Amino acid sequence: MKGTKLTFFLIFLASFAAIIPTLSADHDPEEDKKYWKARADAAFNNTLKTYNPNPHIVASDTNKEVHRMLKGVTNDTRRALRGKMVFGPCLATNPIDNCWRCQANWAENRFRLAHCGIGFGKTAIGGKGGPIYVVTDPSDDDVINPKPGTLRHAVIQTGPLWITFSCDMSIKLQQELIMTCNKTIDGRGAKVHIAYGAGITVQYINNVIIHGIRVHDIVRGSGGMIRNSVDHFGFRTESDGDGISIFGSTNVWIDHVSMSKCSDGLIDAIEGSTGITISNSHFTDHNDVMLLGASNSQVKDKFMQVTLAFNHFGKRLIQRMPRVRFGFVHVVNNDYTHWNMYAIGGSQGPTIISQGNRFIAPINDRLKEITKREYAKEPEWRSWNWRSEGDLMMNGAYFVESGDPASIDKFKRDCNLVKAAKGIEVTMITKFAGALDCLPGKKC
Image 1 (cartoon, helix red, strand yellow):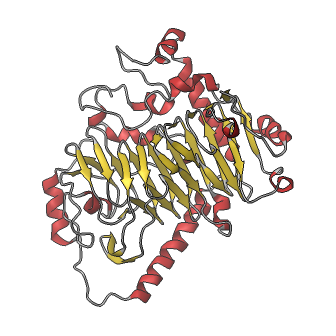
Image 2 (cartoon, one colour):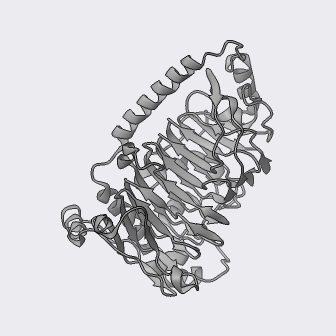
């Protein structure tokens, strides 16, 4: 990373010199429409390029990585990790964490994280190779000409950028935070809260990593003129209040985030977004947790491919963990300890492969079913490919499968599909889900 790390002073000089144009009084709405139409067309081309015609192979590769890591963990260590407290040396419990967490020099080698992804979002390297931008100012006072040193100023820059934070901070976004391509938001080494304002928008872009931050109490943004890049601003309608909105974007990896209490969803991925991994994250206190595909008429979402791995779906959650339209979702080695309607739902014939998860059903006898098919009668949903393999069902939980069991057997035979780690391992695999308290110079 030597030679790439810039001080804030240098970034301030470079950005202040000429990066942000001033607001024009003659903003043209028609030009704005043309701009976003071009962005949408380019984004869908990225969707087609990112789509993997053999998604079961990606799922199998994810499972291989878990098994490879678990082989290196002794039975004694695994038993200890299932306890409530962890003492002694750093213990990484899944292949993502095993790639970087137990290295004391992680802060000097932040780019290593870009090589630790798994699943459909594995190729996301974010801002690797670009400068490191240190956010020093938690304010968000100007959404058209953001101040250097702020998070909003960082995410609109051109080219790869690895964004870190100088200290603990809480950032109240006045309007949705609109990112550009090839960015990493890396909260390691500081407690970073995105809270009590608008959320993060990943729209029509490619190659993003969001890691190690806390996103909660997100409200709707009122809309208005907002800058989305160094050379463009435009009028935005009211934002929905999602914690993280992925809209027509590709190669996105969200890891070790803690999320709760947003006005709409915690995470939404819609409008042809694909190549996504959501991992090692902790979700609590919310109704509509995760929406993958927002419209029955949006056929672009047939290309949606998402990996949900090593997450903890925790206290006071209601539904949509996730809720899926179209697409292919691999739900692997997650811990579902709470739901009050259902855990996994969908419509429009998505493929959902559930492997090695732990599902603990609520006490209410009417809420034991993990799955929910919406807006479809049984003759229709019986053909949807929803399979459960190696899941641990507790307290009466049950998963209603559908589709042709022979299709999974075919993939096992033709693609050497590897089974996931068993659900009994999930308490260990997800033990460190959520934003971590990392200190530079020490193992995380």
